[in-house]
Image (cartoon, rainbow, N blue to C red; front, side):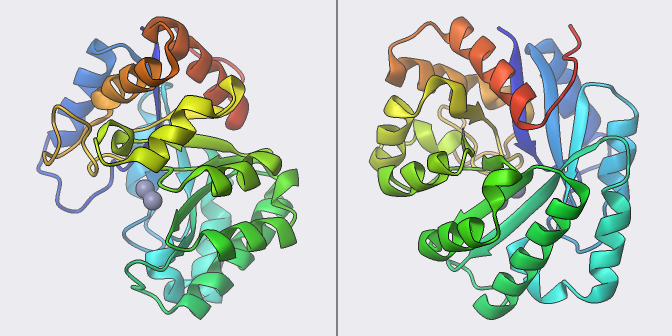
Length: 263
Ligand SMILES: [Zn+2]
Ligand SMILES: [Zn+2]
């Protein structure tokens, strides 16, 4: 089964020496053909670590952006740094960006300002966007619409909302990426979307090191476990996992405009 993890953090401060190398080795052994590594989500402006890792392996791609948790840090200087990182040849998307009203680590007004500025930057550089949204569906959908995000394209990562929000973002041409949440028994709204979302709009991710899917729930996650997400999606949709994995791979390639997937 050819798998692609469309969202993983390889630059967490808490990783032990050699941990990422181990994760990557298990990924390739486990059938992964690609990983989208999200740079700088926990530390504003620190993209180098992820970009270095991406530079070591043609199967690792990168996205860079200022996370809503650190939206207050989107100073002109930080935005300049981001703009510079986007020129790196492994960077295929701007993200993750968006709104998170669950934690409000940055005040909502700061989050909205950072989100809007980065969407405008995405227009300048013509990159798709990776969107993080939590308890902010109304504002996220409105900003995406008002900022013409349908012309950018991209993905709602770690989809954790219901059918109503799904319809709005599908209308904007976005992909929906499912994480380990879809394997959790209580995630009924997410599972409802996982059953019915169009074949050509779904992606799969781990959000490593977070949100480990069943049967590894509660443990530190890693990209190889995207397999459990795909298997659950296949079960919900009543299709063969291998076929779905192939569809998801093609979708991922379209979403991030990846010219060639290496075998
Ligand atoms: Zn996120
Ligand atoms: Zn993330």
